[in-house]
Image (cartoon, rainbow, N blue to C red; front, side, top):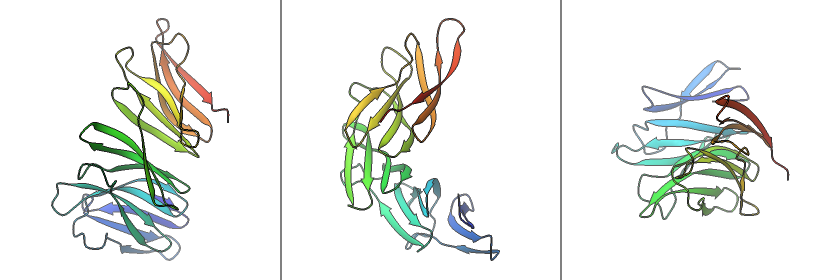
Length: 204
């Protein structure tokens, strides 16, 4: 991960985190306080804030983290009602952090608001396997499967708490791959020819 003149990453197979400043050509280890072997991963960056996951010293449980490079302050983020070791932070934008967690009912999506320190959950009704594609503003881009199709494309608007289907009409499968701003790019499958690329614009 790169922010301004800083490079953030891990070494020793993820055991330790480092921060290098390209201007001063210096590097320092900035491990999570109290954790000897972090086994960590950085998943996303917004401004000076980095989010990701690490495995604790027991090597059994995964935790989410938020790191502010400017202040080098670590915040450990585990959803309170999640099964231990299942909070998986994926993306950050502004004060919003999204990811997945598990409980007795299965896997769910969550949003954590940094400013209010409030957790919320959201699930696509009747969905099978789901995965997060990207977070942009209040829109979470999601791909999911059900009994009718291997993959569907959906957008969840956190402000309005509504789901928007972006399946291509007539497609057998619609798979969102990435997004930037209000645009989503992906692929879809029809009978002939088999595979196509699509670009979708979210209308606010």
